[in-house]
Image (tube, rainbow, N blue to C red; front, side, top):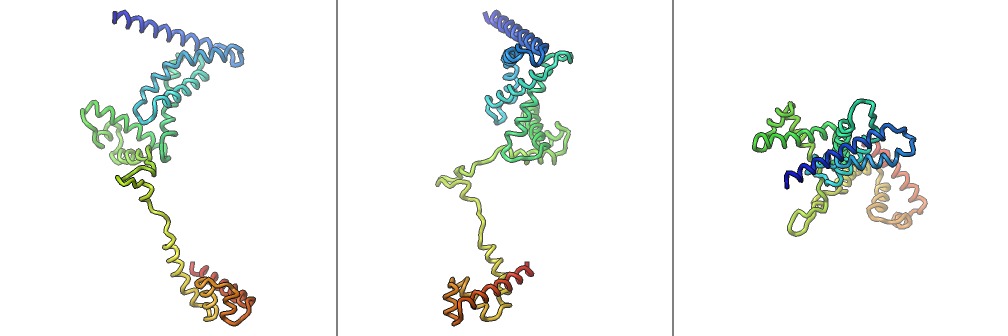
Length: 263
């Protein structure tokens, strides 16, 4: 009974493939503006969906959901159906397969990297992954860097560069717990420390303030260190607020000029 069932399954598959081939041939023969073409196009795409699913399964277990890969393969299939020209002498499968695979590879290259890296490194990562799988089967162990380099006919430095670049393929969330107490990764990252900038500013500002006369230095100190208003400074020095304003403006202009010279 098993042999009969397998024979029947092969026969159904052959019939389905023949039907799919007939549909693509019929669609390719129609003018682009033919009223029957849209419906025939939909039936053709549906008939060739098994090919898209088969090719997407070849790229499973590489970190991408199977359904997402299948959708990408379907996009490639649609492009193949729309671009196929029967008079080129190439059967549809021979044209569609590289088109679909190219779409899947572009997806891996452009959409699945957490950090953007050069295309050369993206392609190198794919080559290293494929070589690693092949060599693991043939060698019966995990291949070394030298094994992969020899298999791909590249230098060991290039293999190492590809492995380093592959780290950009996946990223770790800043919300990832890193301790039993619940500390998250983001909490361990440093932040901008304004103290360094202030220390540098004080180092530069001190000598500049020293070039002012004693009264100007006192006005600057009362205004920005003591946080007094101009009216309070005027009362402190026994002069008018307008005079304080003029002196403060003049002192700040001098300081700005000194700082500009220093920086």
